[in-house]
Image 1: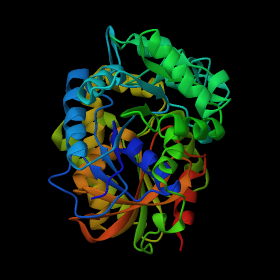
Image 2 (image 1 turned 45 degrees about the horizontal axis):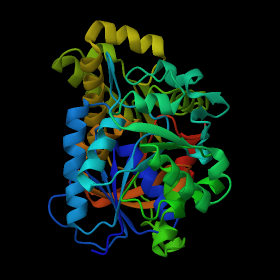
Image 3 (image 1 turned 135 degrees about the vertical axis):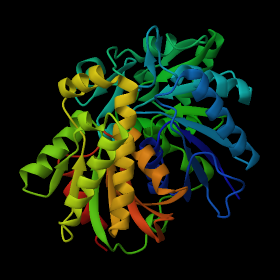
Length: 428
């Protein structure tokens, strides 16, 4: 394998977000679900290992990330890319506020490097960083819907401060005066920060032009940490250019379905729009999932309902407003409630494939991880973009040996009509 870029993503939707940008920028990419078992029997310029480490404790996230790093280095990866969410959120409990910093420092130590960058900027999706502060659209992160996220609330938009609270290393800032000027200006600021003892630098970026200027400045870094936006500027460092063949998938067929577990504001809006259009939808009631019998009955009822709509795309969702989520968490416990919902949606996804669904949209990072694992998908071919950060993919599953089309959508991504537009984008 002639691998150039080895990538570690902290959840499954984030991995496809990253692969989407790499493919559009000209790389042949293979995405694996978890650590690969042995050497991949395919040629790729980049391999993205999708982990489920965003919402687990730092020690576990470090262990799994280091295993992925060692596999990628054994396969010859020249540069390592640690990918996290464009809202910079991760594990949150008590006084420990995130695992992005601890994982970054562990990767740096393993690679023997004394400097890396960190930026979740993804302007195509409204994520920009200015003066070290993260904006979601026109709002500071701390004023966005992420402040009420049920698992990883983000109430501070100052990324230097957020990252410093997670790190032993000194954290600094590469501001827009450098990024907006040139790659050389960025390199000069890196050297200046290193002389001051800074080992990790948040990077401003408010446009794709900023990311493209940033790309060449990252060419010699053993480790890059970022959201998916920085990926648009890296393939050119390896002499690669965009090409339509990198995103071609087999022709679509079979039934269509959407499974949604995300409670983000973007996904809630997408669910509401789908319902408002009078399209078939079924709400999964998490309060019924407290025991195995209730869970099995809820899954059976959802699948029986889906079976009655063979000609239309169907939506099965547990997505709910923050107040409703908090009430369920209070009754069942935060971890137990999440696990029950993901278990139910994963079982439903398997049942949908058994009914002949071969075009499947999954909304939510944790939901995507659970569904993909239940379906037995280990690798995906990355195809055309639906919305920024969200591509269609093609994969084999024991439940569909001939393959299926699947998209894994981050809860925060996609326009309000994403659920209906996704299938339209797949028409050959």
